[in-house]
Length: 254
Image (cartoon, rainbow, N blue to C red; front, side):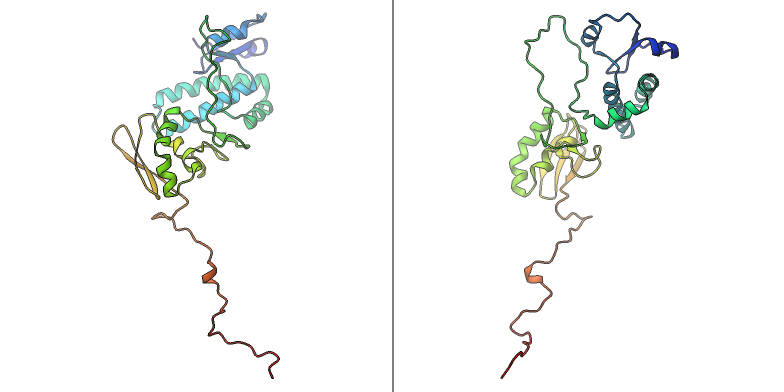
């Protein structure tokens, strides 16, 4: 039920946006319980932080589209809807406020609006905390990880650790660069819901897709056919000659 966002209406009204980028405008006077009603419908009043989260979702959609995992028509529909939200947000909050919100956002820690049933009470069980590895530290990016992916890695954890893999290589989902940039993200970030884990070796861990494709998650800490690690010389490889056959200087002889 998307509505057009008029230029003059932007100044006088509030824009509510759903997680699928559907929008509607509420014009003054706005009731005090308006936000609560919108939360039940998975809409939220747009502010800089919510804009930053929506933009992070669009970045993810763009990556999936380029990887062939999101059809072009779906991506273009999301792109057009977000562009309208972007125009409204820039006019209402200004680019500086939006950029500041984007820099300070941890998309995984942000709680987006969700549909709440009318009889849902405050005493219901809270949603589980988001998966974070490592749990501490200032990391700029966090890649969402499903419980199913963690369970699959748990099943081969002891085998992988015994071969020389580290826990971070298996479980890390936070990094300095956006996924999949850098080499900080662990195996859990690469597992799709229908993937299975196959062979586990020191050099790689094999994943098998639903269509029978075989992929290899490499261990970047060991030599690979395309990568050789240069190690510093050990004590036995010291260039100085201290063997018994080396000449000894005669200092202060008789």
